[in-house]
Image (cartoon, rainbow, N blue to C red; front, side, top):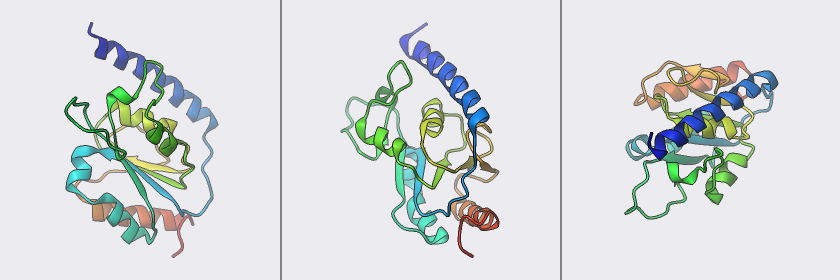
Length: 173
């Protein structure tokens, strides 16, 4: 078994442990949405301007986005991306900027990815956001609301999100 597979197996155990704990302690916030954090993949964020679309439709400002991308020695360090190398064997994020992103108490965290990604799932679980939404195809334990939508349909996703946030009185009508 190579080192990467061993690390991923350990991270899966951590995700299972955190998600079990989360299910027992989950309380849905009644706060109005004012701050938004977005977690996605580099492939998605390079094709779609998720922040601009979310800010436009939800009529909010200053959303923050972080993307996961595969580690490459030739890439420069970025403060908008994290890689599998930014997570230690204990499942802790060691990149300081990303760690502070996760500790920020966003009113809404959007997991904008529709395939299982161990590192993004761990980030969603460790985020201090009070309300989390994402795609149904990923992991139902992660989110308070899940949407079944195509990843490239950002406008439809945002409109659907806005509709549900208004129903829950988390956005002004």
